[in-house]
Amino acid sequence: MFKNKSYIGISFIVLIFGIYAVPKIVDRLQSGDVVKADRLDKVSSKSNSDNKLVEIGPAPKFELINQNNIKISNEDYRGKVYVLEFFFTTCPSICPKMNQSMLVLEKKFFGNPNFGIASITIDPVHDTEEVLKNHAELLGVKSSNWHFLTGDKNVILSLANKGFNLYAAENDNVVGGFEHSGLFALIDKNGNIRCRKDEFGNPILYYDGLDKNGVRDLQQDISMLLQE
Image 1 (cartoon, rainbow, N blue to C red):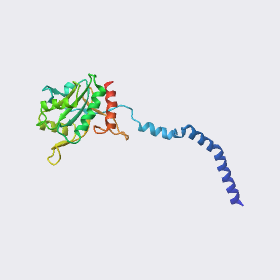
Image 2: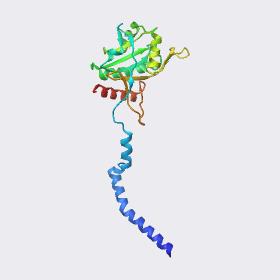
Image 3: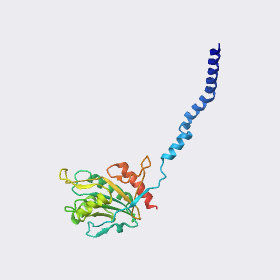
Image 4: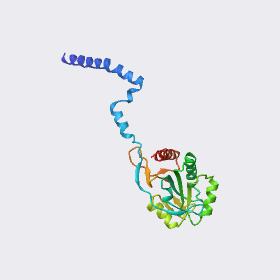
């Protein structure tokens, strides 16, 4: 007898809960508000970045020769937002894709005197000023602020590996004789390396020059820095 009363009491509570809660749940499902619970709102706001780019630190100094046989240093980019890569003209693998990504950036910001590109060869023995000039013409480069740079091989490899921490090395076992990163560095008007954060809030450091999403993110962040 007592058990039967307990069952009746529990059933009554469930019935009351259903009458009160179910219509509200249905309303929230229909209106789309079911995803707006307080806890989810807090998680969303925490995972979203503040849209401010991380300052990694000063970009390494360099002084090299461009495709027009003019000495170019990091100081020539002072006051400009610029993107920097390491490549070589005879690269049979990733460099053509990197070149195309840079052309996308050139086209996006063409005519803006505060934007520039630095493409530094890791094969300066082959990539002389004349070779780089021909390469730029072949690509159809129009911007006067896009410098293709060459110089001493050891200096350049040190700049890549120790300066920017972007891997580059000679390797006779790979096609082309060199291997390197496909990443782009973003430098602000004050000469500092900048980047966005990943979904976990960690700095990405560099942008993937081989991926359309990486190039898209880079365009967005360049625009942000140009407004600073």
